Image 1 (spheres, rainbow, N blue to C red):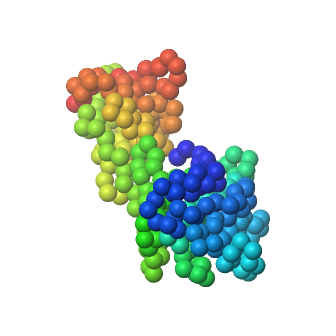
Image 2 (tube, helix red, strand yellow):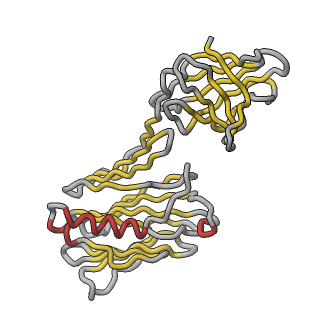
Length: 288
């Protein structure tokens, strides 16, 4: 997945955009502090909620009844010794605050998030619900329902979309991933024009991405399975390969992360091309 951009500034913009809503509290909610390590949102009734990264501790929350009142005692929403990323994103609507925050060993040096936190607090902010995902680039966005009683965290890639929902009184549910489907033109079995190997594409399912199997027809025995990504109408890229039989050889698998299959016409010839400019054709295929 692509590297996540820090969301602190984006959170502030979203809060300003919320001014157009019909809920009076939503109109007044605003980000009053937004730094690399802390974000503070002020709700329509004057209450403030602060989320802060604390090195060696994790993600810490405080709240207060007005801008002049003392803060509550710090509460650790997520404990970790991992280095925090840059910026915390806050969204607020109808008294509900949704948080996105990320951690990685060297995140501020460019390493993508390894620990992604979604958190939601409401009411008196004495209780927060949290959801933690590992080894991916984090949530792109969050939508809080108009009544503040539910929120949906979402992210989208070139091959899938993932969501997790929060509901008042129930907390977070399970993550759900919907995978992008391959175009019909790719499905089926393809034989290399030199007779060396063949490909069989599989369609995405409810719990699996689209993919393909590559197997040699002569020479070194090799069978690999691969997921595919960056799915478009006439191109698709192979992901990391799993060796099933024999050993890897030329185009079994295709160069992982550095090639694409191109099929311009539904009944035409398919090409395996290296991701260089100009494109370099590594193999050609006809449908069996």
